[in-house]
Image (cartoon, rainbow, N blue to C red; front, side, top):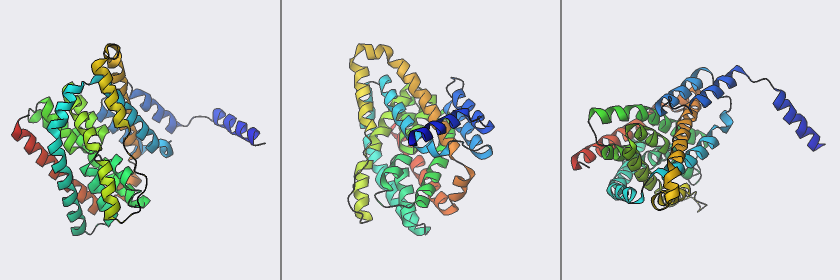
Length: 324
């Protein structure tokens, strides 16, 4: 009987007429695979759909973007060289430590000053300091954050990511930044890996290489941050979600450096990976509905903006001063 019921449900799904909302979404989704669509345009398309039409598959959005982002980042490794990546990683290591510690301290102080709920403030600070939504997703179960607190923190991060994706390349060209400088700046000052890669890829191939390497090295700080969080919130030690995809990214980079056949076909994998990141940004935009934007609130948004401006301007000043 159960099997018969499943067959009827599957038949009903196949016979169902596709709605106009679903059709528009699917057409936009496919259109994002076109080389005519840049990451900022894809994000804008997603935002338009979220505000005026609505995401027809919203319940699948978070998991899909999470998987698609990780697979795409691994694919980018097939276009990078180990020696260049290590050099970029060394240059960004000290900046990373200083910016993470500084952002967390300022964020916690601001949260108390603005009287923001403690866990919400901590998630916003962690997301700004390390790697946006990934850090929030990893730390929220450790501090036992509620759904509302997680939604507010993610909303703040995604709103600022959307702005950075468009604004950073404009500022970079205006200041005549080198690709190394711009890649480093993106990795330090933009929250999510998807927006870091989206902004850097439009600036140049070397900017993309520097930005991806430094950002993923920064993402590894999720692990010590998770341990610290267990003491700050006196939470029981649980399973920490380590960013395993970073290891696959490193393996892909090694393969591209030392295996000739991978070097020959790696460019095709990189092209697919970039298309995947464009789709990721489209889906992120589709998830920023009016409900999400309204749930953020003014005080958490102020905290997020101030933290973002501090880390953006401070890292920009350091990078331009050392003349990378």
